[in-house]
Image (cartoon, rainbow over all chains, first blue to last red; front, side, top):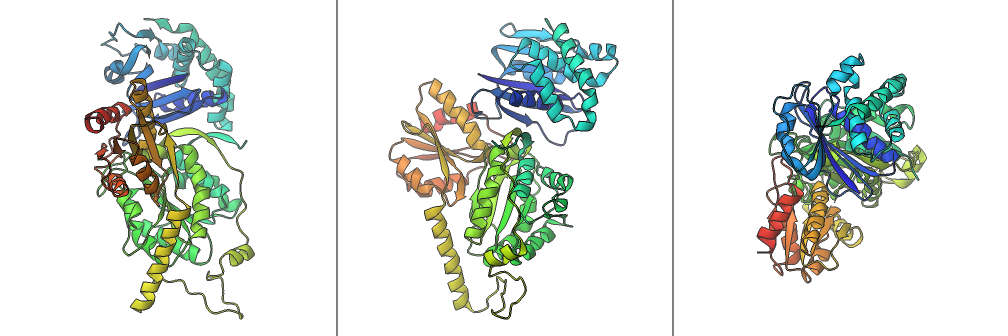
Length: 180
Length: 359
């Protein structure tokens, strides 16, 4: 099993850290993982994306141009990556701020109102964990327990008191993700 | 099993330097390898192993600090990215001339000049043909995973002392910036001063009454003595070719066509091999792990079995020259690669296989 994922959005949305937590969750589940960011002269408000690969085998290329799953968090990323999802693959997006919605018929499209839900829960910073919850609901390759273990590994100890809130966000994301 | 961590290639190199018992790191930040010095500064190994970590005022200062440390028998490491490595080349040439151990990491970015900060493999010539002035070679290792960014520090340490020669780890922005699972090796204590003196009787550790002065220099104004010295260096490089060539073969046993690649390009080519096999194309990959000494003998053997070879690298064609020299026109050799910081995709490489190799 190999799952090739692109996560794309604005800088500051937690795209890279969400990818890191997902990759750590893969390690907790005894998988091979890679995390390849688009790095560059990028800043808050610019675009940010990361390719995460989870596999039960040795990972060949950490850079691919077609994905099993695209997790899309803004319009420029949707415009750029909708066509890179493999036929039969999965696209998960937050419709907040989206005016041109995905149109492909040969992929499975899900929406998750994570921006709105994060505001409802009173903490916009847990936005990315709501999205991650939506992803693991649709693609249960890693368990919630292993995602929490991944969080523990990637968060510095001084932030460990935030884990229950993040866990609640993941669970909420699992509940609200829906077929488009 | 060692400790498992999710790390960037740059961080894995830094952690491996601490664990390998490297005595000192002197560097200067530059994208895409600044995480090396950031990691070392945060880890503060000077409080635990006593390893010195110092940000110098420039690349040139840092390489000359390495020269000083190595002259005293210590094992220094430094790291930079392409433009910074060019600045270090004078010092690297001096250290090769003075026969000193050194670990250099180059996390290559697009060039020439300041170029850009995206991944590239356009420093192959510089790394493998010496780089600085004079008749010398570096031992060049090309990691293609974050795990190897850690493991190759141990190989570099061994080779640097075995040959008393600088070792370059030639990486790139992909391997430096990406995170993968790393199994860390158990820490090896740094040598004591007594152990340094025993291992490096040539070092400037303070003159003892029972021996002559040790002199660390690359200068000898007598051309006959200098020629003898250069020939001695040359013998070392020949020995590297006999004893320390490293490579990896992927699906070559039945291959009709062969890719030759290194570093991140070799990872991309592994995927190309998988894609080709699905289509029934018998494609294999030889991944060069040492770029000097080059695995030319093995490539020449494989040339007898394949119809053609494609060298794949993120440059306009540098590795391809060594492949051509190795096979001596026995099979057609082609080149494919993006450059300037653009990374080729597995499907682009497969298209090149079809359009160049199989035509």
